[in-house]
Image 1 (cartoon, rainbow, N blue to C red):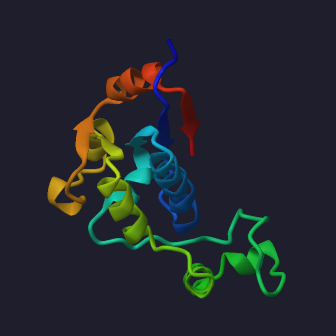
Image 2 (cartoon, rainbow, N blue to C red):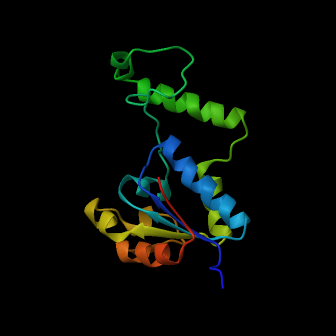
Length: 156
C-alpha cells in the first residue's frame, strides 16, 4: 500500500524573495491533492505576521537581477534595501504574481497546515495577536511527526 501524497516544508526565511517559494510550492502541492504542512521557524515567522513588512536586500545576493550593476559597497548604502524591495514589488505586480497575502489565504483555504515554531515565537517575544489566524503553535516534534509521514520534505 502506498503512502498518501504529502509534503512538509520548513520555512526559515523572512524576506520578500524567500517568502514566495515555500508558499508557491505549498499551494501547488495542495492543488495536486497533497496534504501539506509548513513549519515556520526563526525569520520565516515574519511571513505569518498579520501586518506584513517583508523586504528584500540586494546585499549578499549576487544573483539578484538589477537594472544596473552595483558594486557590493553601494548595495550597503542607506535606501538600497527600500529601492530593491520597491523594484521587486513592481516586478511581481507587473508579471501578475499573487501577493504573499493572497498565497497565504489560498494555502489556508486549501487546508495547508501552518505551524509556527513555539520556541521561536517565545525567543523573539512575538504576540499571538501579531500572527494570522488559522495557524498552530508547536515545537520541532510536530515537524518530525509530519515529516515522518511525508513523501516530500523541503527546507527553504
